[in-house]
Amino acid sequence: MDLKKRVALVKEVGEEIITETELTELLKTKKKIIAYDGFEPSGNIHIAQGLLRAIYIRKLIDAGIYFKMYIADWHAWLNNKMNGDLEKIRKCGDYFVEVWKSCGLDTGKISFVYANDIVKNKDYWELVLNIARHSTIKRTLRCSQIMGRAESMDLSAAQMFYPCMQAADIFYLDIDIAQLGMDQRKVNMLAREVAPKLGFKPPVAVHHHMLAGLLPLKTEGDASAIEKKISRKMSKSNPMSAIFMTDDKDTIAKKIAKAYCPIKQAQENPILEYLKYIIFEKQKTFRIERPQKYGGNLEFDNYSAVEKKYTDGEIHPADLKAGVAQSLNCLLEPTRKYFEENTKAKKLRHEITKQ
Image (cartoon, rainbow, N blue to C red; front, side):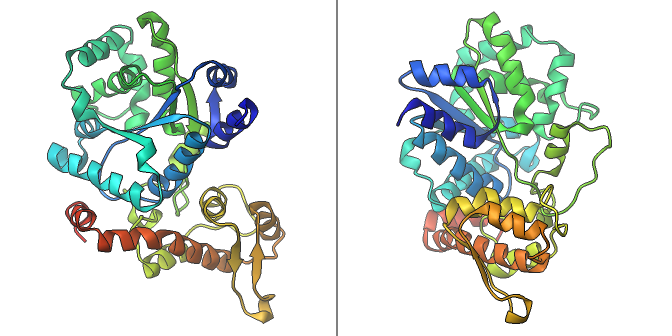
């Protein structure tokens, strides 16, 4: 694959790339390029973490980039996930890996790394403290967003270590491309700032789109565009705002039916987002079934055509929702089947989700 096509694939992943010039030079000059994404294992896993991440990772692998998936179990522990039970957090990490296997991610081309395996090394902690030495408390607090926390919150002393650890992860794992959501932007910028001071090359930051939750959220009028996107992202804290990877057909239909879907509006419309970022990435056509008196069935082979008909008022929100619910149900069927038939996966799901 030529350089232009490789850059184009990465740009399909990155809603923001810092910087595209650095990315092009990296792809041009380095033989083995390593990208990573990281997760705090906690509770159930929704389609933004499952299906969408698998799509992004596949694109980077297709661009000839080696990928590391970082299971940030110690970070989840610092962030008080799963009541601070580190053993349960690690099991949840195992559960996440099984979910990615179930939705078609080629795990043979990915290296899974657990934070638990690298925190045992003295060199790692020396790196964490070196980053802390080159960061102010104020600068570190600005990164609290990466934990799903606000700067104004009463953070524990342990949580103050989190941004320095995440920046250290990038250097310790020898990462060239930090491929994370827009909500992780601030810590990637921290890593880029301290890199020259510590003798490292700044990582290229590829910030991907964050899938919106099903329900509308009110944001402050003076919030930046990035802050508004972050506030709208899918979150497991409100189960009705998220489609989980093992949700059954009826649950998916119920959640989608109640979802926010403003008529004739494409912006901030989660239903159209799922169609654009997931459904058309996983299947060639999208079908809407409706009675003949309402215009009959429709079939599309690209997202733009659906969006135009919707914004023109030729597709009713209820019909769009029904079509999206049906497509998502088909895409999640392999995961449901996997967790019914795979003994290890089934046990992990029961332990993590209590289902």
